[in-house]
Length: 105
Image 1 (tube, rainbow, N blue to C red):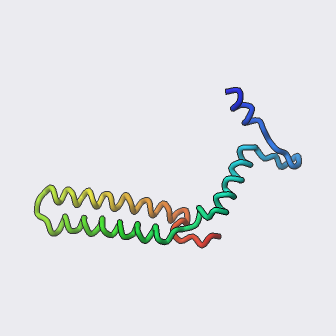
Image 2: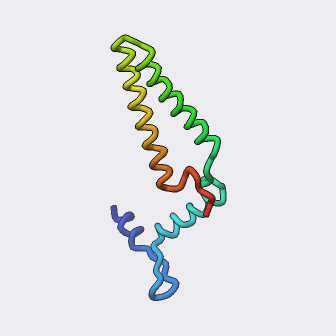
Image 3: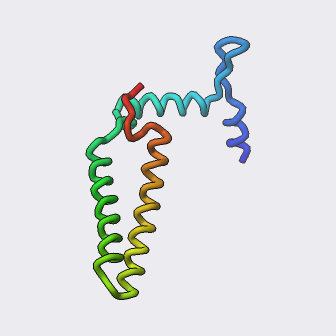
């Protein structure tokens, strides 16, 4: 516990108005390393595979609802549709971060 408190008190000051916490320095260094390795680049292949998965969920939900007559098939279709919407929320969340169509700027 004492070591944690000591780590939190370590700052590097370049001038009186620009003090940078050591944890901030470490985070910035890690971010630069990840950028250099290209780990923040958008993967078009990933999203194409994800859209294929979404399309299969939607088609499966429609098929179970319209082509089948049993209650269990309709419930399965409802579950597939719920999973489809839940997965669409993930894509919407990624779009909010510009992760889907990012141009790198």
